[in-house]
Length: 140
Image (cartoon, rainbow, N blue to C red; front, side, top):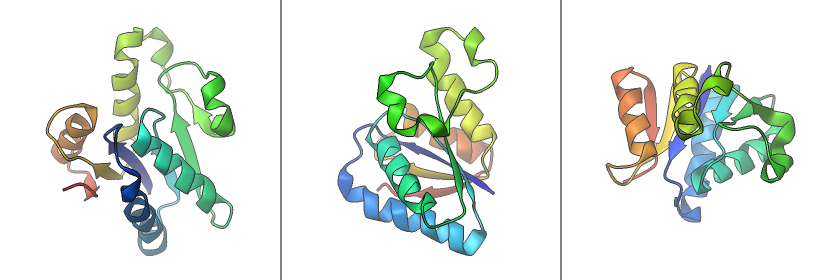
């Protein structure tokens, strides 16, 4: 079982305990051991931080799925990065969408933090609903 994440880039730090609890519950109750996470915005940073911490004591694998070639800002989690096949042929302005579709297509469960109906997080939550993915919503 694989889980992915979509949340607003300005997600407040107060969401982090709920995000951690949701991840742990998936690992313990549903044997989720694989995770795909992006690297744009606060929600992604929180997920990466939690997964990095949990990886030290649990048998999980997580991948930071990049939309662009790695840069210095990716150095902290470089060992976990992956570029989706075919992204090198995608124009830069469409790379994040390509990456997000890859994560959605390859995940069984989606954890979201969506508090308004615009932006990428809302768009990919709607796509997950249409694809009948299981969604754990941490937003309002």
